[in-house]
Image 1 (cartoon, rainbow, N blue to C red):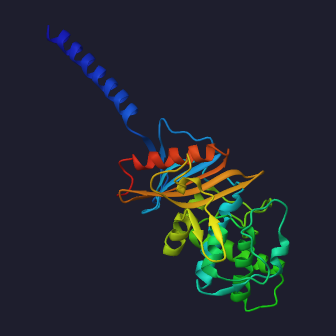
Image 2 (image 1 turned 90 degrees about the vertical axis):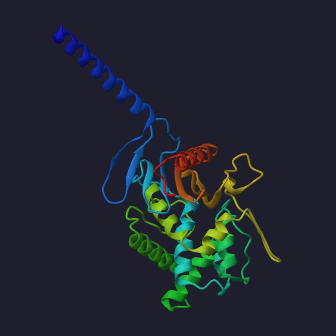
Image 3 (image 1 turned 120 degrees about the vertical axis):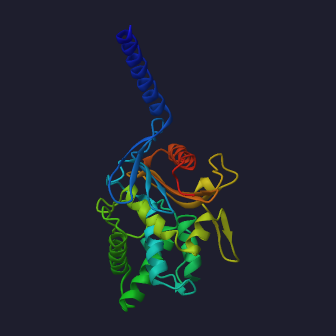
Length: 305
């Protein structure tokens, strides 16, 4: 009698363990520690179309989701985040910058802010011209100005200035721990030697967002003064867009044929600050992916508060 009861009790215990395991699998994320401060989450129901993606908790730098996070891909105009970091580090926002003959380096169909040779523009406005309408002309002007200022050589050609500035970009990336990246220009137009990763871009974006002026600029839907009107290409911050995301406050779009559609985004809700990176997605997929990542992060109980 007692032996039969013991066997019955063991079966009940085994059944409860199995049911408990099923419940935990369905209701909790499975994740593995990769060392350091990074925790890579593998959510059961989250997938993105993009070839690579990262969701970062901005406050502590931990990785909440990752897909091919260290795969080298072309970053397109998300490169301009790095350009902004270097410019903010090396320049002064009130510096009056003269647009030079670098405007003649424009290639067909590239995005511009409409700068003209001889224009004198404060660095802060040039940053807007680069980050909002994604002006490659502004990126070149910023790069050459900073290169001349940092080197002390005011006679640099545009090509020399861009090479010098790219060196500053790579130096800054290395300092930040973004060690899988290499940059050869300030704007992100395609070059096989110009690449980054989703994780590196998240690291760089986190550094950029430490600067209040950068945060201000990338959160703006539009900017208008007596000389310029700039519209932010990031639809997450555009209230009239179907891709508007509540709490979105940045950061940068990107597209080339080789890079596909890219987006580094940020959002804040209830004191939680998140950074999302999606690389090599489709035109709509990049927003679907980014929204999915950000929503996931805001609903994770272990995201920073």
